[in-house]
Image (cartoon, rainbow, N blue to C red; front, side, top):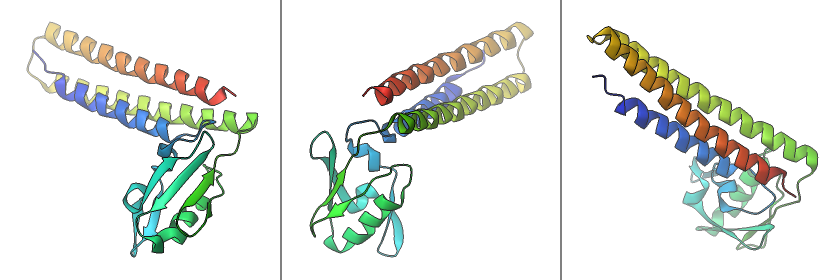
Length: 180
């Protein structure tokens, strides 16, 4: 019997990465994960935001970024401002960076949904690659023809199941983004 556990684990990782990417997309509300993907130039190298500052929510439309080292406040502010996908305009008071989250226009909401759809398509492509690699391994395996067919069917069903989970998450996120 062909073991599909490895492919299932890999497909699970693809789903997790996709869900993490969705968390980073803007909705109408402030969320600390919006800044999770940013890299800040600090101490001569680029570091993830969570290693140089604490990001908290200061209301439905405000993020508060508290640097661990006040000397990095300018670099953090620059990193937030530089990311055009976020479209945020931070302001600092010397200790804390306040990041107001502006209301999204209908056009901007549609752009963000398109970005989410692109990320979903990337995830589905990764699922298909994993499925195809599993099929190649299955063809190389010394198994009876009916065992190979069962293995292929199992891989197809697994890919379909993960693809459906991606689609469900995408629909939920799209609805959340489009909700005013």
